[in-house]
Amino acid sequence: MKIVSRGREKARRVYYGAVFEGKTKILIKGKCCFKEHPMKATLMGFLCLSFLAGVAAAPKSPAETDHKALFAKHWQISKEFTLAVAEARPAEGYDFKPTVEEMNFGQLMVHIAAQNSDSCASATETQAPPSIPSSSATPPATDKQTAIKFLTISFDKCAKEIDAMPPEQWNKQVYKFRGQPVLASEALWYTFTHTAHHRAQAEIYLRLKNIKPPAWRF
Image (cartoon, rainbow, N blue to C red; front, side, top):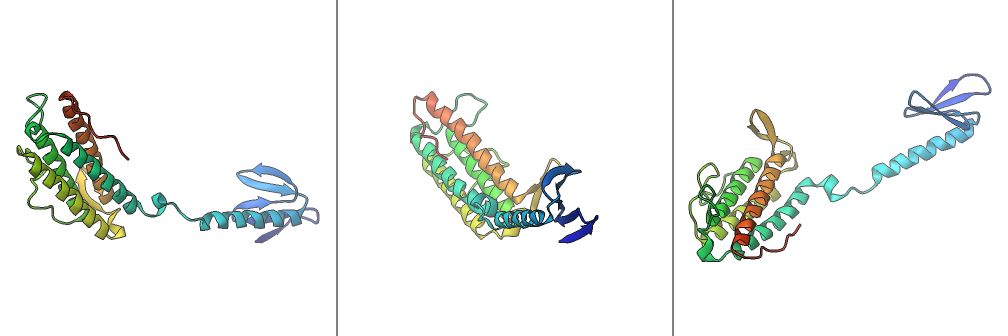
């Protein structure tokens, strides 16, 4: 607390950049001022400091304190949702594709698994599962059993690597995209969004064969 003397009728106290002078509140260049009653100003200052201390001590939500746990939660939901979409398609329909230019259903599932594996390996600086094709290659035509196996491996291995990832890795640059740095957290959210994009595409494939997709979940 700093006392600045300006005569017997005025006293000014400065509390962490906020200025209080007595009773009447005015705003001068971003400073809160009270005229006339210095004792009341002192009390108001302590109340303000107490309030700020309470805010600082308030418990933080998971979103504020543990981004990794939040991602892991939604990664598990994404796994369950994606596998439900993969299971909804009969085995004999895994070679279906709406147009010549698009991937068939089985390729689409492998493409999701491949990107999951590669992005997670980049984010956690580990190795992608060797059994899953690279995301840089054209996905091979795959039967239902193999596609679901690839998806399960990609989601489970990524969850394991994320759980073991040290906190400082979350904001570490892991590669560049078009000359721009990409953090580990961004690489993970990229593949999460990529999965959602192609899962929605797979749901359209289901609709085209009059198959109702699994209910949306979050």
